[in-house]
Image (cartoon, rainbow, N blue to C red; front, side, top):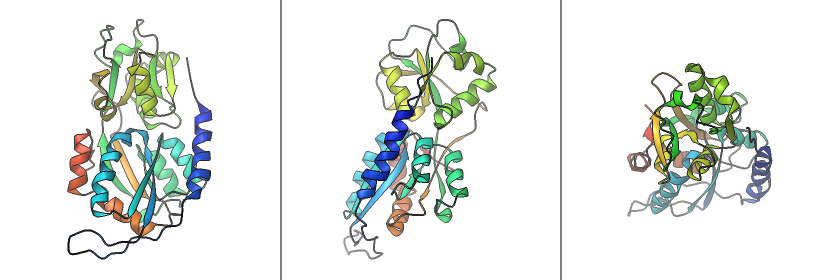
Length: 273
């Protein structure tokens, strides 16, 4: 059973082209600092296009950043990385892109839509198999998903969602993708898959370790077997058309700081090496 909600992608593009297009063209940050240690800057509004798996951590990052940068308003648009890529290609008025995989960032870089010298490998995550908290299926690993008692598995859409692409890579390397694909329910982002597992609408799902950590209604069955998929790296960079490039680069600098590292690690991420 496949449930590819392409309508949501269209709505996401509409959001970025219309709603985000209404942002005021704020001034960029100045470089001076007050005696108290706060950055003395002009007003700036930054729109960050971020992978859905970053939803929870970005709230805490915003609160921390605004302590020293009170004049910077941070806005976030969360979706699957492929959907965000499409929106940026369509001209979304945004400043920063944080992808859950290299593929989408590289595609935008190749089209000169990113400011290449700002792109950094920011975070690393893990892929895990989860089941509803009250599951009695007895799954112990990714290979168990092919068993007959698993009727429906939640996976990110493999064309546009990195978590889905990692899932396909894992099951392909385990020699069972053809079987898994037949009972896959495909979601438009990893948080959709998490929601299906939380509500027992699927028997199990493939998400990131950080998504599983954010929910009390699921349990982790297993981490992806060693070598079964490429490392889950989150690159970040400034969008070339950003009207607030100095402010955007300053925020990226914060995301690599020790302060941000503590927040990322609290939510299960690690800084990329």
